[in-house]
Amino acid sequence: VKGVAITGAFLVAGFWASTSSATVQFGDSASARGAVSVNGGSNVGVYGISFDSAHGSVKNATVGTTGANHGGINISGASSDVTIGGSAVLDRVVVSGNTTSGIGIQGTASNILIQNSYIGINSAGTGAQANGLHGIYVGGTASSVTIGGNTSAVANVVSGNGEEGIYLAAGGTTVKGN
Image 1: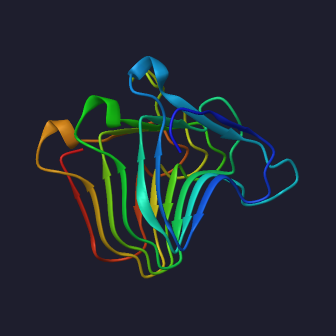
Image 2: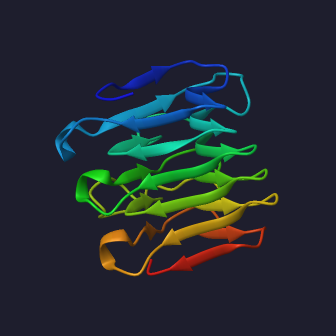
């Protein structure tokens, strides 16, 4: 998916990858950053983007900043090799203003990388736009999760969330340089 905005009412997610490979990238400039903002109405558990036993990446996107997603990005099941953000400025992902966690990693998800993202703050990086619960939640038996990295280019800003910025309920997670 490249260069579109996803809005409206959905049963599961605005974008859902299941047992497949997916790249979600919106536009080729910061001003063309796309938005994933869905409203599930009475549907509980609606995510902006959901990887369910899938792999892929999300780049140059805002998730939840203009709507009421239940959760921002969900990585679950046996998902592996999922990257949120990246080292280039245009890779930045903004995950803010969701009802529950901004990014939720659970199930047996593995080899997950979160870099250069704003989580719980606005897209300008100047003020809070809280996710209702955690900025990033890692649970289940998720493993090999890396949040941040060794340089400032891949550091995340995780701030202003309703509860913990990063909540680790599973082992195998490395948090550095944020």
